[in-house]
Image 1 (tube, rainbow, N blue to C red):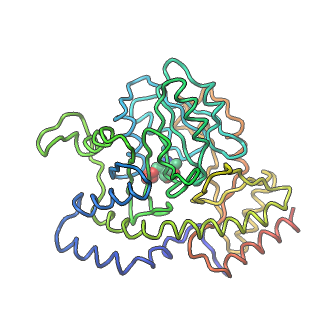
Image 2: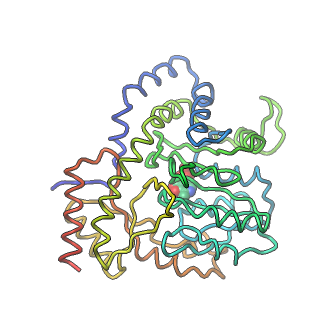
Image 3: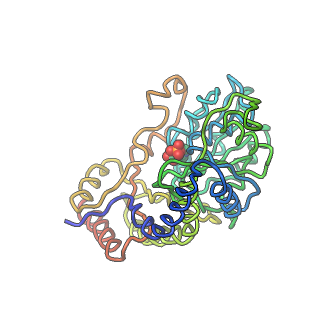
Length: 372
Ligand SMILES: Cc1ncc(COP(=O)(O)O)c(C=O)c1O
């Protein structure tokens, strides 16, 4: 039977394999493995790509969040509002940085943080908000920034799923005090291992993150603050430099696959497509839609019977995660709970063949016309 995976990283890697191996050969011969020219050049190129002045690479997207919160001066007891429907790191980073995550409901239409609900959660302890562009779909930054400005809050964009997404042709990462990125291999801009970055127009903030990520150093043997070790390897930077060159092309491949799915799925009453802002460019890290929860298991099983892998991002809202019990007592997030019961993601990887896409589309049409 034909097998179509949810992610197919190998197809992107194939495009850059020779060029990466040449670069890696040089780095191995030079014996420069952490930091150095390759990392500096990637930082410059990624900042240019986003259209922002400064970038620092760190060990992963979770550290990017923790170190940004620390650089912004978070103190014990400070509250940071985060969406209740996201990958858990958005919230745990706040705890690891010493703060309290306030889990806030998302819009049922987009599954991104709801600006009005956000405003209702602001207390005299609130210092900031972390916005996630979930699945690569830009959140309503205009409204969120209006609320944040009114109450003097910092804004962080958790852009781990949104490399290349934009609002009014301005890339996400430009709508906050700082944006954090993950280069986990399945991400749109994936590395060949863990990696992350923080971008901002505030060069002082970026220097603070750089120092915190490197043992609180100012110079090699002089440490100003308690830091940690969260740096990017030169080999990863070399890989990322090659992958960055493909990012726009790969994102447009993702968008044309998504367009085809949307055209088909919009015809079925058991399906709810997620809404995008009119002026937005979605990066489709995942193609996710909502299905009537009564049919989700049946849909998953049907797709599996056809050899098509689908995913559930995420099966639990954050307030139901045991790890976050302490922060979940008073959470009311019906849209997030409903999303956890109804979301399902289809393969949307670059270099999917027309044949594979047609096969998935046929399976969708068959399921929604005959099985529900
Ligand atoms: C929204 C979001 N935030 C943060 C992270 C954490 O990134 P990392 O896995 O690189 O630590 C991820 C990655 O999975 C993510 O999807």
